[in-house]
Image (tube, rainbow, N blue to C red; front, side):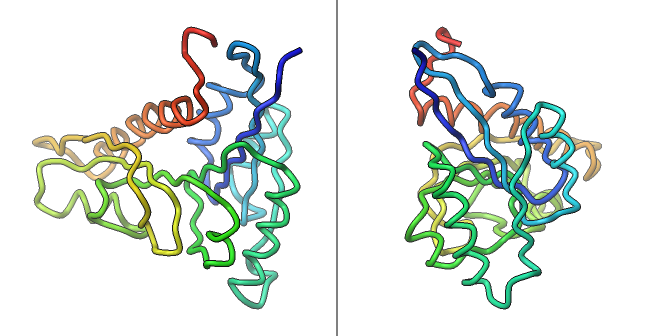
Length: 196
């Protein structure tokens, strides 16, 4: 009988990376294992909720605005995640700065739209585009209490081309994200594409 692997994906917005991961992995078989995507968001109005529900996945909603402190929110998040017993926790557009209360209990990876350590934080794509550099990119790294810190697992460069607008550059950043994040997940979970 196939063994189930759970990947918990945390998101705050439109959930395009979440949907990409669902399409790549959810209920797909890799050898003797079947991957299941679970989803969690901190925003009841997040567009990604409808994207997940389209595939029969009901995201857990933990609204950060209902908690008095970051630590109280993180404690609830840890509890919900531990109940899921995920094999891997993935942050894909999860717009929260996490406290040591979370990072000491949960091992997670994060997708960030720049070539870290450059351009940390929420405006990374725009800062990268306006930097005068010839390349931007995407990074997958381990999550620590330091914002967009943690060991870098993989990166992909995205050239900033002549005539690019912020919108056209952002589109190519997302295209790179949709390739890099699944590749890192497959690598960490030892899922061979030939098995899928």
